[in-house]
Length: 135
Image 1 (cartoon, helix red, strand yellow):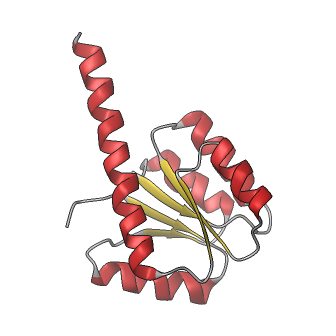
Image 2 (cartoon, rainbow, N blue to C red):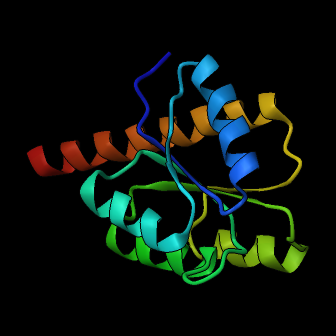
Image 3 (tube, rainbow, N blue to C red):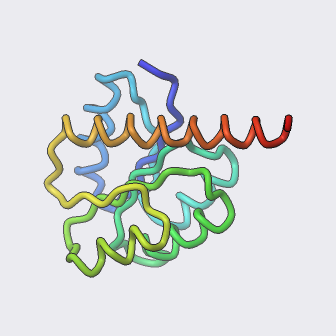
């Protein structure tokens, strides 16, 4: 499996632990943040390739995390994973730069496929940036 820098951001600790363990079994060991503030700290220290982000969190919510990350690090591919979403939220998330929007409970195999597609998009962006710098 590719060496993907993956960050999982969700305030539901049981969900995070279960998902992180399942991802580790697929060699996608994520960093974990249980709130928006921790997520922003991790991103500033080590920019992930892909972020799985819940929207509804106390304090700094997922909307603010999405906005800050896409403003400061537009190359980070953000997959919104939420249990409280709507079609309006999906449209807003995608309009604000999210790579994908998924509702809980997520189909795990589909989530892994989406993570890989997001990573491929990230790599393609990097290749384009490198080519532009050379040319």
